[in-house]
Image (cartoon, rainbow, N blue to C red; front, side, top):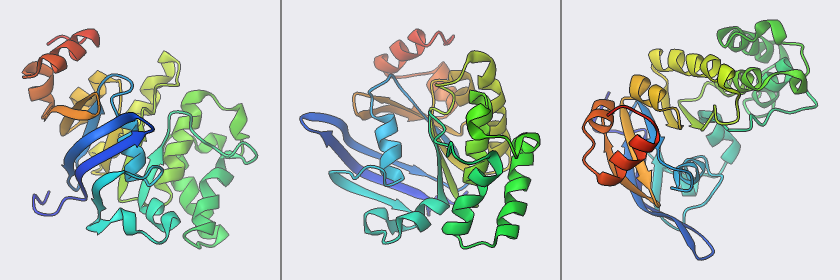
Length: 248
C-alpha cells in the first residue's frame, strides 16, 4: 500500500442543505487495498460524504480527488461510476429486469461490452456472491439479503477500483445481515478497496484497516480498529460506542 498516492484524497469538504451544514470540513485519504469504515450516529454526515465521492451530491467547498483526478471536473459521470461502484441501503435493482439482466445492462451500455461477454462476466460474479441459481429470477421476488448480494454482483461486474457501501445491511432482517457481510469480508480479503458506512460495529472491528468516527459533520476521531474500539480518546467516541453496546 503506497503511502504516497492515495486512491481517494478528501480535503476540507463542506456540504449544506439550506441552513443545515451536514459536512463541516472533512479530510481523509483512502489507500489501495484498504477497507475504511465510517461509523457514527444517523445524521452525522457519513452517507452524504459517500454520495459526494460518487458524484450524487456536489460539495459546497473543498476538493475530492479519486485516482489522482479532481472529480468535480469529471466529464463522463457514467464512466467514472463504472470505476467507483456503490451499493445502497435499498438495493436499487431494476424491478422490470431479472437478476442476470440487472448485472448485464450497465456493462453493455456503459462499458460497451457485447451481450455474450456481459453475460459471462455477470454469471461469474453472481456465482461469487452465491446468487447464480437465481439468475433468471425476477428481482422483485428476492429477499432483501438476496437483492443486496445481486446489487454487489452488479457493481463488481463493472470491475471497479473502489467500492462504496452505504449502510448495506441497514434495510435487512437480522438473519440476512450475515450473508451480505460475508460477501463483503471476502471482497476485503481479495484486496478490493472499500469505503463502508456501517452500523455493524463487529464488521468494522474485524474487517477494516481504519475506522473513522464522524459526529455532527466532522471527523471526531480516526485510527485502527484497535485504537478506536479499545482505546478511544474522545469522550464522544466513547459515548457512541457504549450506546452501540460494544465492550470497550
